[in-house]
Length: 354
Image (tube, rainbow, N blue to C red; front, side):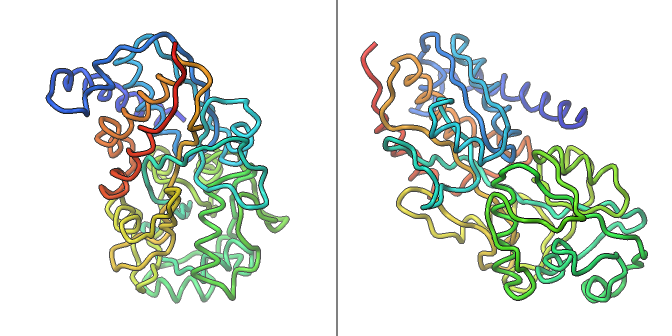
């Protein structure tokens, strides 16, 4: 997507300047930029939701640490968790924790939270500039109980809108996806009676729906199909200039996706001991109800000195300069209380002597 590329390229240029400007500033926050690391290559894969943020922090970190190369493939959270377990990658990206039934990583690892952002309910409906949707209506749309845009339930959510009789095309992720897990988690919570397809990184969608890989794939399908609706991360929805609905939250307020709303949701969530947390459908009048967390997966004990030091440096960069860069690519920094908790395990990563 050209719009996505141009916007993120601009953000990377901002990232290039920021760490250089911070060199020499007092405090531990500058240490990842000033201590030069040995040559290393870190390979990661997983969440496409976090990809926009990953691009900007990888670009900024590279400017500060020229000898380190960090690669990341946005293959989806499910693939990222699997690659990490199987030793295919040095680090993983995921928007959903491992389930008890999943194959677990073979050694102690950490969930490092990085940013939060809305999952939008994006649509393509010419002439309808704004839309409000309750959880129950969204559940019925995505399970094909509602098939046209002038359905009575959509009209009830939007009494003043002029809704066409256009058929609804439902677009969803075809790959194993943390965005799917969080979107369907919202439907389970907000519409437990109407939503019967369950929740997870994959679900069994109705046969007459359209699947697409990665958030960018869903965005592209919605963009090119009149009458389409799909769930897309905030960054890619904005990059594709998609329209998205205000969604009814747990307090009964219709909230449009925003970083302020995502921050409000994250601040209301309970953080577990392993730093997993669930900001979906949290309470609060300002909370956007489909707010996704995302994490980096990393082992506590590293096997290679140069890679281990590079990983520690990258995580420190994310938790210092990286948090300042989040909004430039449509993500919100994690809450300050969670940031303090997240920094602590970075110090416990064991790196062998070089």
